[in-house]
Amino acid sequence: MKAALLFTGLVFLSSVMVMAQAPNQSENLVQYDPLFWKEKLKLDDEQCQKIKEINGEYYQSLFTAYQKEKHDHEALRSMANKSLIQRNQEIWETFHPKQRKRWKRMWETQESTNES
Image (cartoon, rainbow, N blue to C red):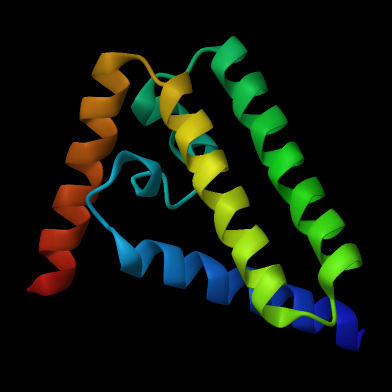
């Protein structure tokens, strides 16, 4: 139980750190799972399947990193950051150009709403 809580905390911390470092880079545009907005983004079945595979690989890499580096928090954080950037980039590449524009618009609107 302790290990699961620590693992979850490290994943959250690493994702926050990566998002804070460079919010305008393309690898950081996919902060959330786009499958929640499948209809709005007009994702086709092939894209949904690809995103599920990317997410599965991401979580598997986090688990593997945790198993290897659970005592070296800096190495674990670094591996988690790299995995998150890779996941975000792979999902970004799964989008068609119109979907990328739609995704950017969705988050620009969300950010302006949060700032108000």
